[in-house]
Amino acid sequence: MTSEAVQPQVKLITITIETPDGKLPPARVGIPDIPMRMANLIPPMQQLCNGIVELAIRREVSQGATISCHKGCGVCCSQLVPLSSPEVFFLLDFVYALPSERRNQIEARFRAVKEAMEAKGLVERLRKIEDTQEHQMLAWDYFRMGMPCPFLEENACSIHPHRPFACREYNVISPPELCTDPFNKGIKKIRIPKNMTTATARLAAELFELPAMLIPMTSALEWATEHETYNRRTWPGVWLFNRMMEYATGADLESLNPEMNK
Image (cartoon, rainbow, N blue to C red; front, side):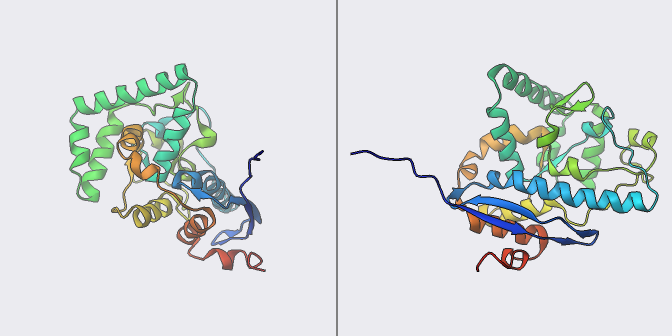
């Protein structure tokens, strides 16, 4: 008796999405017809996020604005970057797949940030946050510490293709010198019509049956490890992608891709 490995069927889906800034070029996405974790949704949603951000940037540039963000300007990389739980699990997968020496280096940086936060009492405050004002005060105190993101190297993002949605969506068009105080009301950021951080956080809240939450980048690896049981949960791939698109666009997959059921 012989056996053959059976490749999972892949559902090819062509999606066209309208945004307030225009229509995204049709995207063809292959979704395996197998159980999928929420972390598996992050790569295609990153591509969608890139397209939405690009349209928003074109809108601002067409109106005479100039993007202040550029490689080598890492001021915003010392902020308390918010991640949805699917992004956190995706990040954990990414770090665990690194060569052992590189992984140890990154994990050591995360520990250093946590120790610095503990010394300032920020970890305890983070656990007790109850409102937006408290979060803003904590975010400001964290920024004043001057602790760079564990992935920042030579003032540039070392995981740029895999960076969180919040980093992709953060684009400044005010004078760059204002960025030394990111909480200054003079800073002007590009308005993004579809926020992927919020969309994935809301889907996770529904499927994990937890309150909608955002996890600071600095706590990501620790939080993901402590909630590993959620990371292992799966749903039918096409259904999961469909549900994600509903949260991301406000429309169901069939309306985005009328040909899928023909």
